[in-house]
Image (tube, rainbow, N blue to C red; front, side):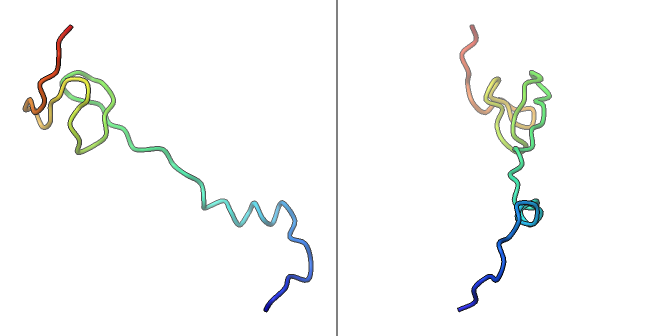
Length: 60
């Protein structure tokens, strides 16, 4: 079994991990109400998708 000969420095370790970062979800705006929503999903605020009302929401 291979065993490291020298300790890996923090700099070397962190350079290797630069591509393992987590990115946030892509967010688009709803054309009806302007709220943030995920692309290709029904708007949770107004309940529309591609200009059609899919979910009936309560208006306050």
